[in-house]
Image (cartoon, rainbow, N blue to C red; front, top):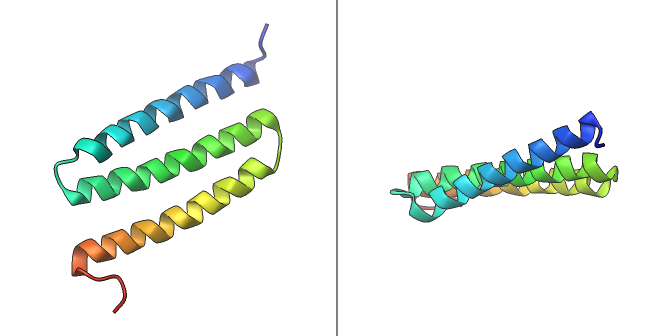
Length: 92
């Protein structure tokens, strides 16, 4: 029989994967560019959460390092895309 922690990790993985599916759907059919940027930002966060859950599941530090890297790249790319949508250029 599985322990409570293993069940909680499996439930968290299913929830994160479901959220990633909804974000990907919004990314593909979003009516405006702003919706697509928001969906991509949420997809980055879900990817980071999935890496954290996998790190807890397997008990290795590599997944946590990947989560930090995903968070940094996702934040910078979201800021760049939002700035591009507001002003039409990224570098002033």
